[in-house]
Image: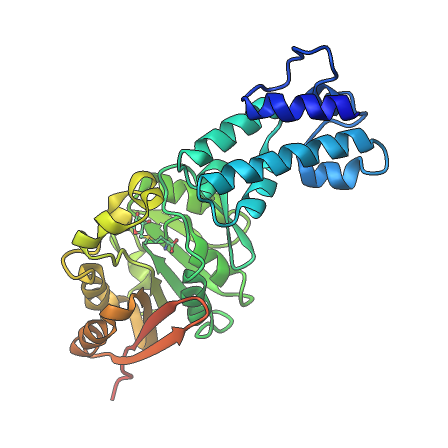
Length: 318
Ligand SMILES: C[S@@+](CC[C@H](N)C(=O)[O-])C[C@H]1O[C@@H](n2cnc3c(N)ncnc32)[C@H](O)[C@@H]1O
């Protein structure tokens, strides 16, 4: 066992993927000769712990090495990422490809094909905006307005993260999600498969069914809100791997917020709400936009997630 592990430690650091150059038992051969196929560390931990200590130990060595490479590349959550990558890889070669791409700056979620959001798995393919943990607060805020039978629209839905949380929240809720980006729509359809949510593709609200007009209880939208000039200062993962159209909110970042508030009275019933996320420096202007649109504004803050949500309530008639 030990010779195999030691060989592997050297070979793996050099980028080898399991062919035996030393005559010692290579790690991946040891793993492969297990009576169960290697399917990632978690599965190895639960599946072969009592059966094959050699395999278990070998995978631990590989995992430790992946952690080291990720840490050297600046990944803050290197242990968590390593566990996910090891678990996702079918074999050593696949793991090497995943780690190399992660070290080169590809977002973890694009490699895994999914992102965790409020305890749910959201399908994310390369080139699609990765749902941010802070946006869980926007989703939760939307849910706080949902009742059985509510009609909820998630505009600019991306991979469908907010719509998924809403769809899972209250029995009988009806959800529509829409985005202009075909890849995002594909992901949203996968994320929302198995729910009754309807996913549309089109510019902003253009693809929503006309019969929803004036009948929406909750209109939630995580619209792009990064000021155009600030896009250049985003982390490379966002700039290189997410579409600019998913990030750029115009000169002050609030161009899409203005458009959202502008369409809200057409879709939202009297007494219903429109909600969106902003950055701290945008709150005052955003509240002004909401009030200028004839809606009653309220601001909700979650310090823990560094998240700010603006809620606009459409006035009741009379
Ligand atoms: C900040 S991302 C948010 C995605 C998703 N709601 C989330 O929180 O993960 C903004 C989204 O707006 C979409 N978008 C940009 N321009 C759009 C337009 N004209 N019509 C509809 N969606 C648009 C992008 O494709 C992207 O998915």
